[in-house]
Image 1: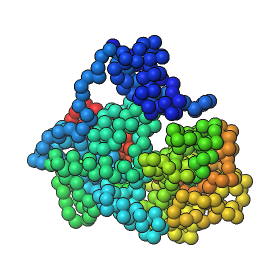
Image 2: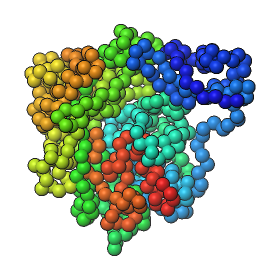
Image 3: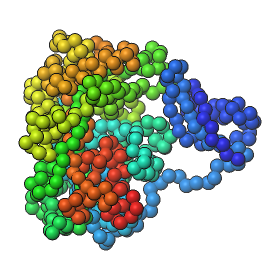
Length: 518
């Protein structure tokens, strides 16, 4: 007999299977000897009052766990001689599109402007030291996409758009721990993701697919409204009747290329703000209601949202035990992001805090058509660059000083390695963002007493929350309305936000190419 039950466990009990058996025995009133196996299904922390774990389990009473194969890489068919489908971009959308195409008998051919995940690491190390930005290989561009070196958070609300468990199982098959299958907010970590991404690439290559690095798509080959292929680095042509465009939210040159070729684009609402960093111990004490979280609890996270003057202000990409990193992709701009390693053991906690940006905010740039919202984004990033002395240092201000509207004479220690420059962030951010952030921080402090702290530092700017441009598509066929065979996909096209939702959209586009139900 099998039963599904939820256990309420202390932090020290939550990861000890033997103590699960004691709890199940007491809960169901059966001898421990009758409990043959306990399979964890979902694990989450409840810290509303006293901190404990909720663990949903399947209990096998008087019967053994059925023999099942370990989650492993499936046997993909050989597609080396099958119809090629071009995929532009090797982020989660592109990689999962490739695996899906292989399963359905198509040959994926990926063109990635950046480097492979291992070579990319060197460029990121130079960027972290504030020495050099490689505009083709950085936190946003390169194998694995923006998520690979900025954390690997897997939580998504897009559960109705695709098969999330299938995405997670594929990641486990390629090297992720099975914890991501049961944790309420699964996370892989920047130290683990590169190996997983490289394993997915090997699966694609072993099946006869192709992955080309340092190959930038500079044009599309279109004839009579039909896709015929792509142009690489302004000279080489590669023919294909289907192209999945999965470039990520920072490939601005792709948007301009599409516009020059006469393809429809749309300005799109997004969000913009700053990244805030607190001492992790402060966040732990607020969330866990104790001065020391002890050895059994992870670095505490938070999720905050409020309305200020009719606009949403919210936290996102919260990185407990993480660091702030430079995420620019072009010269004369300053962008920051956050990441954590798998152990989340940094002494700092950081999170993006963003304000919703709406069409009224980019009216001054309306003469730029579909690039109006993008132009606003670029203007703010350039202002941050100038405020920091035109270097990779970042403009920063103590949280309490920002709320009081006064400059910071000193700045606290911060994880942002290139360094900080004390700046009035109200001079960098438009007033509609700065004023709402200031009021939101007061509201956040009411929800998390102690959050509004002189120990916290604001670092600017966090501007790449999502794409400010949408590439339109028919939601039945997933093709661009002007070009048959062109499939706008993922974050860069405006249809996803994060690793899992991007992977789901990659799967959907691949199924559309294959003529299969989505």
